[in-house]
Image 1 (cartoon, rainbow, N blue to C red):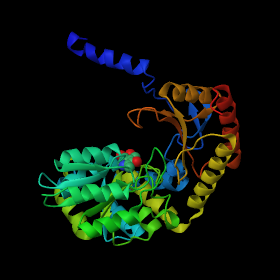
Image 2: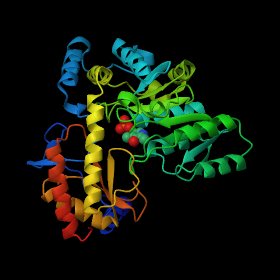
Image 3: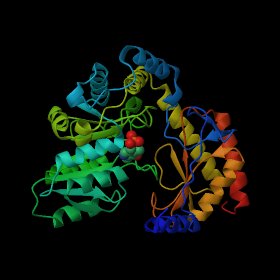
Length: 392
Ligand SMILES: *Cc1c(COP(=O)(O)O)cnc(C)c1O
């Protein structure tokens, strides 16, 4: 390695010294309530596999069939190689599921934000953005070259203040996460919609952790608040509750038509594979057939959170099955996670820059795939490690 790169090793060493170096475990099993990690069976509380669909037999079968009928690759970007009928079918199904006119699929939720935001606003425009918005929203905002004005997290008064104080722009976009993934709290989308209407702001919500979770049968945050027709742009991912891979933007038809012309990841990056798309369609089928998995997810979330509170853990501001276990300093969170793993529970420590400094935590991701026995077992381990490390 040349000297020009020695700064990288210094940076890596600094991360390790601060307890902020991320180590990545290797799985040799599908996603599910239990995983095989480094040759051991452990209880899984890390994934966004909210409904347990990542290894569901219907989705596996749909993917297999799509490989037989459509092969494994999309060939090129859809605007050049043509689009497979499967992708269009998924887009129609997602639009119907979300109760909007149209949808356009992207390779990921991250790409959906990188595509949508710069297509909606540019240099002469302004974006009002929640200070805790997801990295992909932040990057989409930066790529747009619009002026970015942050408001305090979920703080409507602060939003009104910054909107009043900002002038001299052409168009304005108000953008927020629906469910904030690190704390599990929900954006006050009803009141954001009021502000958007009062001030003529385009309103965009990223529903990555809300779809399959909030609303009737998991239809998402717009349904949760009954705001159909009042939110201009919804971004979603197929990689969380839907259990597969891919992202999308849903909304009025002109928004989707515009993104087919100007959404750069749509124009310049190939679509997800036929197998992915077919599995996504099968996930929508399951969600439309029954609310059983969504109901189970919420029951599990309530059960686990109540148990943790009883043990004396601080589970923060969560209103969803996401259960942060607040620990404060990153090295403590890392030690806690390591001890959990030794006791057979896989739950990752999360520190800066994913969450603010001093707010390190273990984030426990509950799934419909967990049984009550699984949750009881986890609670026992949390109690043991919590006492050992003097957290409770
Ligand atoms: C996870 C997440 C994304 C990224 O979704 P991928 O499909 O994994 O790229 C985007 N936005 C939010 C709010 C997320 O939580």
